[in-house]
Length: 303
Image 1 (cartoon, helix red, strand yellow):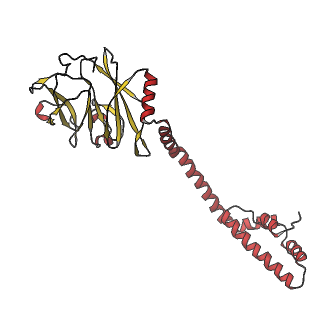
Image 2 (tube, one colour):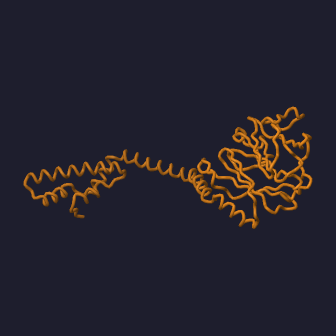
Image 3 (cartoon, one colour):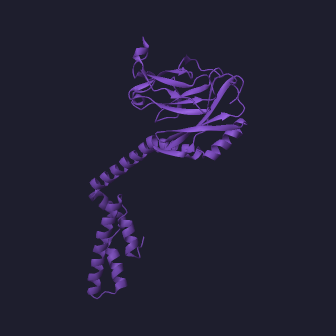
């Protein structure tokens, strides 16, 4: 093959593994050829003819390339090892980092605004709902809804919880709704257990049912009262984390009595440090202990 330019010759001769090594050899070889050309022109040779002579004297670029590879084999091996390590890191990222990132993106993409969430709820259930209220816990928003036409058999509570995106709370984007049911015998639909890392859970999840990491998180609860009852106030009773049962009420720590008014309503209660909600006691307007039931004249199926 006849090489008509230095550029073409250098491209062939310096085509070896390793971008930095290739660039360095190409420069050194190019400088050498330019020096040869300058010497010939200075000796009186025509520039065009001088270039031909330089190319001829340099010989076969393929032979030069093999010589360069042999001379720099150690550096080439290090370069190849670096490439293999880079590929290994990329594979690691693909296996362990891409799925979580994909899940985060999918969660955000499938999340909804408040308006979209309410429209989605109506379309999926074919029912009308009344917004009951919301609870803000550690930056996560829980929005609660009651059906305008309750079932004669049970109380229903619908809730949406806001999402997190790469650990950051997004208070105006929500998951698909979840539903809880409770017998119509009780005015309280559910005692929601709120925890920083997750959505709403039943208060029945006790500390020994949680992971060690979850036990270290603060506990809060949302009492959802759906209609007026004979209970005028309630008193949360707390137990130390790790303790599963009691032999007497003196082992419980009583919280402050909290009035129940303007039903339906949501009342948030925060557990003391290192404690969780064990039970709840209810009292009428005269301070007598009662079991919550529909107040006289009220119905369990009407708000």
